[in-house]
Image (cartoon, rainbow, N blue to C red):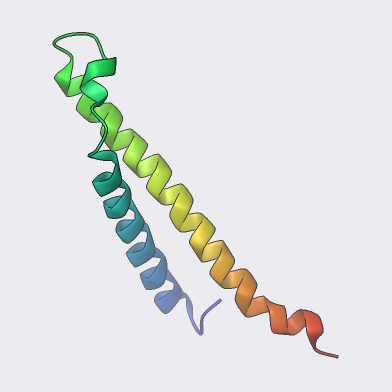
Length: 79
């Protein structure tokens, strides 16, 4: 994907952290505590963290795959 594994690892790490932070920001609009049983605030926060990591890393993987595939397109059309 990139010249070496070091830059690729750095891009992947930054992408995952960015999309996890963006997902956390987006999920702040939901009040998951209302869907949970009363007095289960800690469990609701843990669920929010797990949802954030799952959604953010999935979106990041999609973004990185799309980036990799777009870089491979010239190989399809070259003779």
